[in-house]
Length: 389
Ligand SMILES: [Zn+2]
Ligand SMILES: [Zn+2]
Image 1 (cartoon, rainbow, N blue to C red):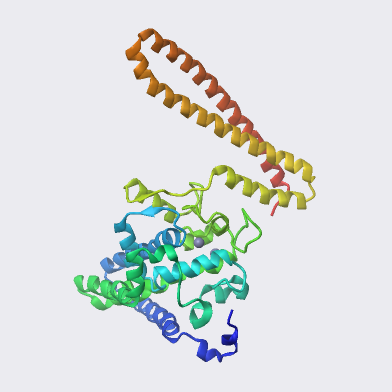
Image 2 (tube, helix red, strand yellow; image 1 turned 90 degrees about the vertical axis):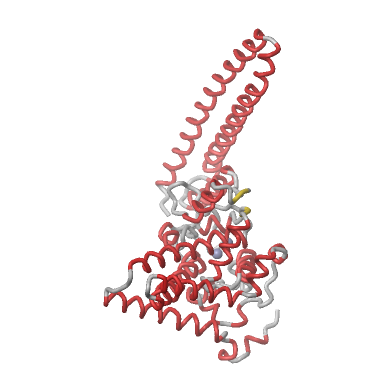
């Protein structure tokens, strides 16, 4: 690594166009917000448009730049990719290619000096300080797979043009449509950009500062509901760093992850496919591993904890096997039954009887296994209660 730039004057290391934008744009946005709030004369149609545009901007970064382009955790229809790239540019966070290249390094070199926004260099540096410096990242972003995507390449090449067109010109035109172009520019442009940028910046700062290390204590990333609220679901960042291929960050239905809901809605509409998920077993295994470290550190015997952990994992995997067998039998029967019915009615009823017998047996076994798993988990939870974080 070239270290000579560290000896350069700090003024020479500053990326002036980016710095000026990051300083002036929020000032303009906040002054506009104060002005319209105190005057109470903001056109409500422009306000609603700006809120919707802000949500679309954030989702283009989280579902697009992050989970699609950086991690390839699912595949999206060209129309979706086009919109992510177009609206994503309006966030003024760089091209998808550059963003993804930086982010991939952040994952592979997390918490080291090579991490472009390492939390070890301080909260402020990880939040936005790194953006002020020319040499904080590679200016020749490399991402072989993305360089084959002509849309990504086009957005990278004309990024500045796209950014101004979709980030400022578009909201100004919408404002003009309602008779107030300047309001469109200030609220739908400057203020929206300032706020959505902060939401993304929190991922690199707060997500590595606030919350629990649920799945791994080897990384600074943490899981937090509050941070998830601020970042459209990216707050379950310990899960994300440990299982970066998963299109979800909040894996439970009650966890706040609108980015996951968006991807799932796209899949439902046929606009996304091949959504990647880490298996429930692997996820539970990682969580129990972390919790057992905690339990042992609170004085419980390591052997006992290991046994209890095994009990949960074995019950979970045998339950899964039973459920798979049940599904298989059901499919087999429905496929073969039609042929047999045509062959001979006797054989059909014979195989149906055998199927129903096995079905009832499997249902009972599944039920019993569920009880076994539940009791093993309850026992585990009880121990955890005596070992608070
Ligand atoms: Zn990531
Ligand atoms: Zn991170």
